[in-house]
Length: 303
Image (cartoon, rainbow, N blue to C red; front, top):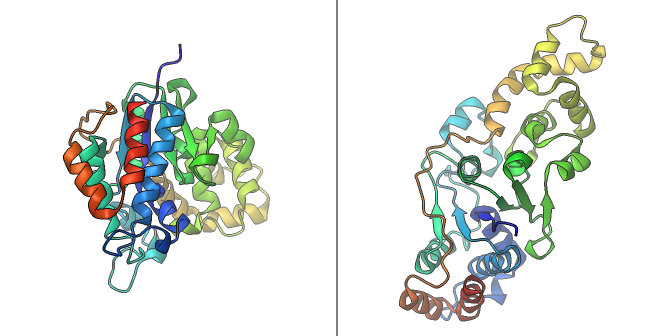
């Protein structure tokens, strides 16, 4: 019999998707406040629990969405998301919904963990490397493809088209899609670039060229070493582009790679089968108009 997985939920990724996937007017609390992100997130988790049947569950949070150590290496990292006041460009009506999500998770007894100075990706990477498998990572963020590890039983449940249409990605699926193994995905992403994270990539190097370079040289270290070898056989135009982007690549590889050594505390990953504080959950459901999603989530946990 297959062992139930540890389900690591990229909470910020999913509640952002919930916010933009459900119109605000379609999910209002009794006082008129939008709770579309809360309702959507709760239903996402309920669907994941019901369909994946984990016995351990952790919601990983963004304690710091733009860590200073990453910005020091690459100032343009997520810079496009900054407002004039220096905060994250998050819709005004989403901001107050995040504490409600945290309160609901606490009342249910679902472990939620974030680490100061690190992103949810780093928390996920550290837990996936530390906790016994199988491990499933639910996310809409492609950066986390790098944590796929067939040997340890780590797969990604990619929610790019929604939780109901999630794609289960292992190393073979990733190679079929991008032409690189999970171990090379972060370096491939640094080469290709990712506008959503403010990563420009190397000018003139697209996805196919990036995949070919990582396949040929193994990783960015191998690629950068080859640039100094006159016998490496680079086409002159491509070599010029890579030489021009060398400084960026040296920094970007550290920025893109998840920090599997993030100081994530020991946590109890056990998935609750019933709310640890039913009265508080009832009060939250009544206050915010969450009776239906709360019931669906409690039913999924008890199932």
